[in-house]
Image 1 (cartoon, rainbow, N blue to C red):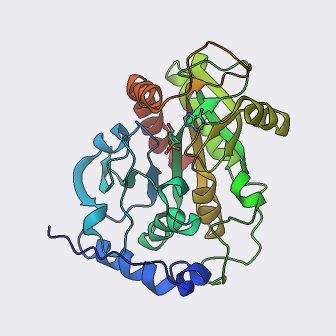
Image 2 (image 1 turned 120 degrees about the vertical axis):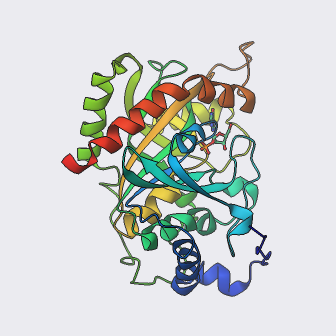
Length: 300
Ligand SMILES: O=P(O)(O)O[C@@H]1C[C@H](O)[C@@H](CO)O1
């Protein structure tokens, strides 16, 4: 496939409008014209979790650089490909690599692929991420089902819905108190039990920060006081965009490292290599879990 990507500077219209409905429609049409898949399930792979896309059968792969008007991935552990395929007969679209604000993209641009998924026909989104464990009961390798998030950048107005609202997506003021679907979480719990993964299972609140620096000790303590169980640099903006346009969401964090909340500690510092290594090590269980959830989706 030849590269058709053109780099666009962010204009003032972009800042107000984000991507227009028509602009996103043309991206989804580009994809629908080139794939036979019509997925109703979307997956976003967190750092080191790209294996979730590799397990699809009959893959049709679109590197981001070949999709007109699409951003490109710049982070190790994010391949930068949109992968269509089947999982036990179900059609799936998977982002093998997501966009982060710290890469220099606007928050609405990071969330834009979720709207592409919406126009492609996605009804359920499975969002995964790597996160640092703040909760003292967590250990590295735990899987936390997300029951809620704290969108920290949103406190300062940095929300993917900032700018003109297009009602074709959803309302100006969407509720977020039910962002993470209870039925999907209950289903995931059942699947985890069947797979004997209960010992790794946690449920909690994910807090998104902008990154890319990891948190100071005082910041981690403050997040704990706010009620966060895990901290990361993604997800919240994607979930807001998904809920705004009526996609239901299941989210899970892989606890890739434990936040060290002592000043002047000699314990190892957070680092991206450990994050990717944990993702790789827990890959098989995450794949089994996601497959099990997808197989039972029709029941909720
Ligand atoms: O894309 P996710 O949120 O899974 O990635 C996390 C946050 C940073 O991008 C990176 C830090 O190691 O992992």
